[in-house]
Amino acid sequence: MKRIIPRTLLTPAVVAVSVISVIPLLITLYYAFVRYSMLDPSGHPFHGLDNFHFFFTDAAFLPALQNTFTLLFSVMLITVVLGAALGLLINEAFPGRAIVRVLLISPFLVMPAVNALMWKNMLLNPIYGLFAQISIFFGATPIDWLSAHPLVSIIMMVSWQWLPFACLIFMTALQSMDREQLEAARMDGANYLQQLRYLYIPHLGRAVSVVLMIEMIFLLSVFAEIFTTTGGGPGFDTTTITFMIYQQALLSYDVGAASAGALFAVLIANIAAFFLMRVIGKNLSK
Image: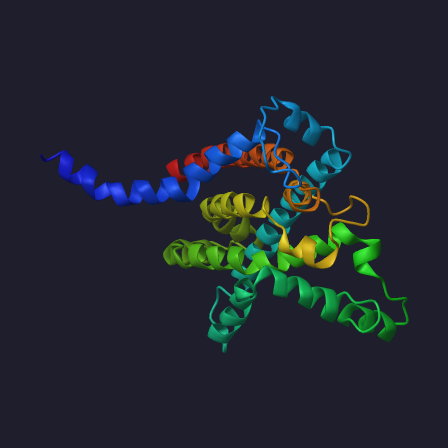
């Protein structure tokens, strides 16, 4: 009886997890091995590994894979470096610090599609955008960012939205530092660079690991910014694995190939999460 009651109490959680994650994964696994086109949904004959072969041999696959990792690692690098810098900058007390913190965190609350529209129309527009007006002010020729540097534009959009998250984690981590240790280092004559190297950066190790793990999981599914601004182009310049899955499913109506791509994306996410969990485990054990 003592064992039955705890298991009964866990039943709603197990059912919820199954409905939300396990059942859709099994359906995706089924579709990945059958021929399922929305143009002819009458039958689902077994298709073997043909869906995987079709997805992996698509002309967009290698550029999409490269763009996915370029976007992923670029955004993580930018958010970690700038997030740590901003966290250190506002760690010390100054007038209006509470307002500055709210302003720094607010971009994370903006929806991805709204974020993309704001960057596309207010900042990157080559005629009336903020960047164009700054270029004209200094006598330079405005750049059409979304045409000339599409992937860089997407990286800037996504980095701007995820920077507050990294900054928030680092601010929280810095608040837990031993103030007596910092004061002792200052009294011993340690300058700021020495404090940064031997105190601040080691202390932020765990926070960096957490930021990298969470960002890697979510950044692999970036879609709204690409769909709203570049549509995966020009060519394959901003096509990612996630956007390629969307193209296969809703533009080519090939659910089987899209499901094969989705399983590949899940595999990438799990491998990345596994290695990052090992890194976090090592940091937490120190």
